[in-house]
Length: 436
Image (cartoon, rainbow, N blue to C red; front, side, top):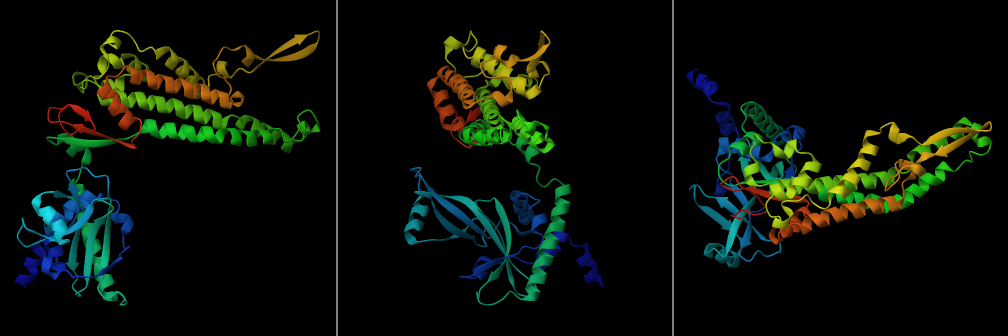
């Protein structure tokens, strides 16, 4: 009775360890295949891979097996060699499974290991083996049966016990989540030393979307236009409700692709300005109490960029960017479409002359570098906006010192994700982990 009582007093993690113990290095089969387990996968994926890493480590120590990319000092662009390392019973010793040539380079320091995946192997009460590991460079966690005889089926008993194992881990995960085993935002904020994060490149993403829409626009708008004149409003078609609705529908849709391309070009410009401002804002202005990045709108950022950001030529510090007027022209037109103000929607004015009713299209008399009505936009309108956006970006680049410009061209102009380091002194550094 005493043994039963002591068993119930064990911590759940201890019970999991005892019921599903980990294999030691010398117990790992030399050659085997895996069969993925899909049980409760949707619940497993609710937790980050790093969460599972911490949870399993809290029960079983470090992973048994590491997959490491061997990285040399020459920064080769070729795919690095991947080696498998097994943890021996001694904490600091590892067995490296690779060729003698690679092993020599590894031991000499010519090649250094960079961990990219990890694995644990566990024994089920039935004797079957289960592998828990990561793939695709720590982005996916998987559970799998180990199959030594590829022609044999996994025993029903092994399947049931593996499912119980996963259920036990999920129950423990639920408790640990409540205890905040992993809180990325809080941890990053309180992390000491060098910090690293990435931003999705909203500039590049929006610019590419604009180009794709621009390339599609002419043909798609032609299809919409063809549908809008499928019936003739000058004939009895106008009095056929179905035909009239068809004409009105496509008339109202006209310009959709042109406006979408224009919108994405403007969003790309906003993204570019925001990214440059974030990347090079001087340390003195990053104080959280100032909150400049959130408080300043795009106009203010563009106008004050040379003064508030490092890496700009001294001659531009005292005067606003020459591109400011061009930006305001774009912004004002963007607001016409986005805010849909009534006065900007004015299309026709009516006049009576000698009893005759005349309609006047006022868009011809409104001053604007591109039409104010969506259905009057053309491919030339998109080209005009693109030209202004490109000109503004180029002029911003021209105001930068060479180092700043090179970083901007390499990362903000091209990379899908933009890397940032927060150095030990709090300085934000674009794509550099060392001192600037």
